[in-house]
Length: 108
Image (tube, rainbow, N blue to C red; front, top):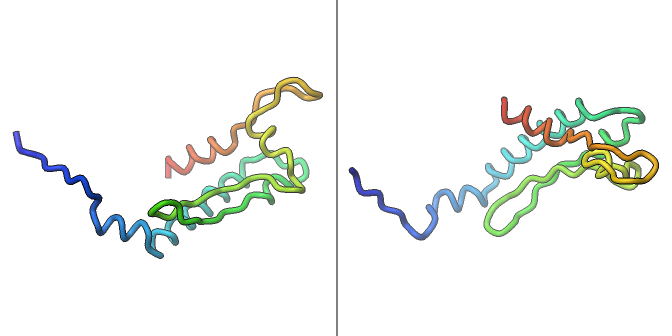
């Protein structure tokens, strides 16, 4: 069996790449594809929830992270649509559209 040497420090190239502009661009593009899939499959009674989807990148720790945000002041029901509700006027299971879109992304 070959010896495998593990180094405690991260690979300097990967560390630099994760903090670089190419990584940020790739993450933003992938998140935009995720947003497009979400907007296609989410229920559209008024279309506000689909239109509320926003993508942004932020630098967290030592790398870029992409975030898809759903819901805003005009579509305040994003969480209850996604995760469901207990009690209230319309109790029920959530639609889980974000997970469905993420599974579609994984299949690409």
